[in-house]
Length: 377
Image (tube, rainbow, N blue to C red; front, side, top):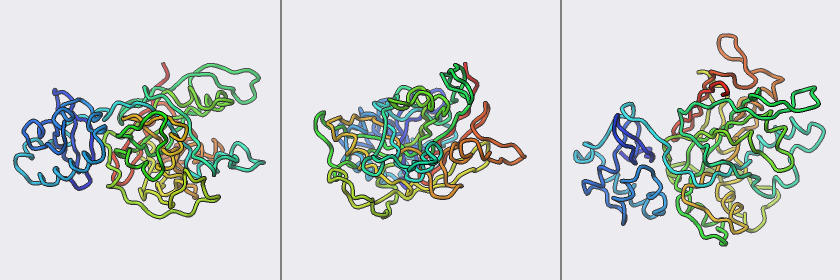
């Protein structure tokens, strides 16, 4: 039962939501196991798994996570546990945890370079700070939604080409961003930076993340304070959180210049194959190994000023793009800001998303993220 294990919140038809452990096409009811005395890997397990979210389990810490995984392994094939197993197609999945804070980074070198070339064609693609720190911004936790939730086309101000004054209306340049989301379990103390060598102790697991983006709203509003309405309307995540130790790590190229001491660690990356599907056609394939900054460095930088981590914090990696065109993780890159339309089967093309379009992000060992665009309201 523990091969490829991930955690989420599910409900059989007509029943209340509760935590579950998914392996393949089966979901094990953790609340029922704890109630029957089969799952008591840490103090407070019964209460944690009786809650309608993973929050208490996540806050219990890495020792509790490890002990739970080990105990579930001992229950594999146990008839008492199998009584509480459900087929994935027979249950519905909910947002797996209460999102406390949401911060989004800009950690892919190729993505940052591509956007720099698009918007500053006569200058250096990377801004001077990019190779010295993990650039990021604080997003809106209240609009993080679970995979399968429709995305309403956002409205806002934008400056149309050739116009002297802005207009207000539905976004015309709606985009996606292929990302990983790092889910914080163990909180940290306010005023105490988290050292890079201990940062991963706080990470409960990883989800796929789609940071939907209204590029026209973003372009008009982002100077001087950064993304706002162009990013805050919806962020989709997978319904199942994969524990970080279950994901394969690989060595990464040396960072140049060498980061400042508080960010310094041997370079590494997660080896996770990724793909973007638009209306049933795969339009890009990438890999998490293309991230320049590690999640440990993101956490160390986020907390360097004393900002605390909270259980349920969600940290997006930023769009993951590789060096080749078919490895780009956003439509603005794939269509080169609309100049090179993406060809789809049947002869249709896209530069940005149209109403009715469905996007599915997939990643090895991670639950998919799907969303359909519905008209502005």
